[in-house]
Length: 255
Image (cartoon, rainbow, N blue to C red):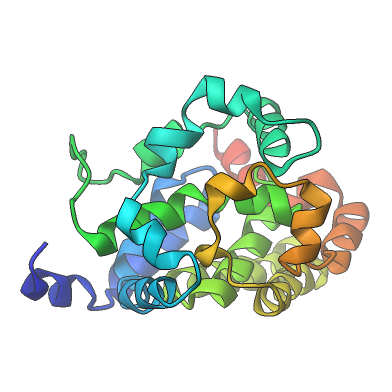
């Protein structure tokens, strides 16, 4: 990717993003729309966050090694099986088994251009790294992935962490629509809480994830200042599974 191409890529395309948001809110399981939104709006955040990574204690080494977390680590069954009980990695392994998701699957959905090989550029690598740790963030925050509210709360958390406008658009869109769909503000308050918790937490994109996966989960949450999602858990109890996943419910109604 040449610099001239990078500048063009970083222009925000609100029309494309809003169109994708409407589709996503009609069918919360259409994950490809998330990546269309990210491509349309998040580009300007990438060089800023990559520069911040280089200024962290381990960041320069991580950028130099340029490990592909999904392709080289999280998709390795032997490595995933090796994580000791109680660690972040073990919780991630359990999460994969519970949800049926995979690192390869997320990478495949994000490959909108169906490229055979990843773009060999530092910013592109950093974007893939941000994508690859998304599911680990589900594990350490406690936000469910197979639930509209859990995804929306983590999206708000992600905006606080990355300042990518695509995350903000999804969070606001899901929260506003939830008021009509649920008849109240519990869902929206859980999303707002996700943003606040993301602001208070350490900067997770600067973490060495190969080391983090071996860290005890509770200790990692304390070290990273990951707060308890109180409003989210209250909304789960009071809304129930159907309203907490209103976008998936709409998909079922259309089938």
